[in-house]
Length: 219
Image 1: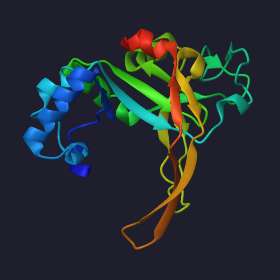
Image 2: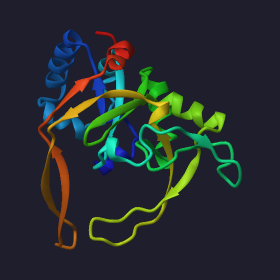
Image 3: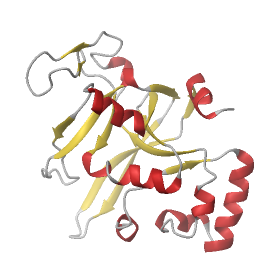
């Protein structure tokens, strides 16, 4: 993955209609022998396959129940002073789609090269939201959102370097769908020093796609 990352940021998933997906799958197998190798494979040599994508999705997930977040369903105002003056202000914690500043140059470059629109999809415990990447940049230009510092914690509990991110509130996004009966499963990995790390992932469940998904990408 480090070798692939050197080529620049790229989306996580490509969205095809069924007929094109079947063709693309056969082509990938013909060229590299196994679909499982695809995540580790640079995009060169697949330009024609990528070009027939309906949309590219950059996917994130969060362990939050949106309906229980304090600001969910409540009205927004705007900051009237300070660095955030003019930006949207929620009345409490709300669902947001997050983009790291370090990913901002790479995604437009991929989008322009591939001629495929990129959407960011964020899945929470009970629902998901999506927004076109260009709309995020537009919201920044209009002053609705902006860069802010976010502190992250490494899996071993130590603090990592703060990162600049953009938080896009759910009211600027479209609903991806309702999530039903997801399971939370424990996972582990061993770091380079031999320490066993633990984390939690979603498993199972289903998503009932919203009408906005079909309006955006067609049935």
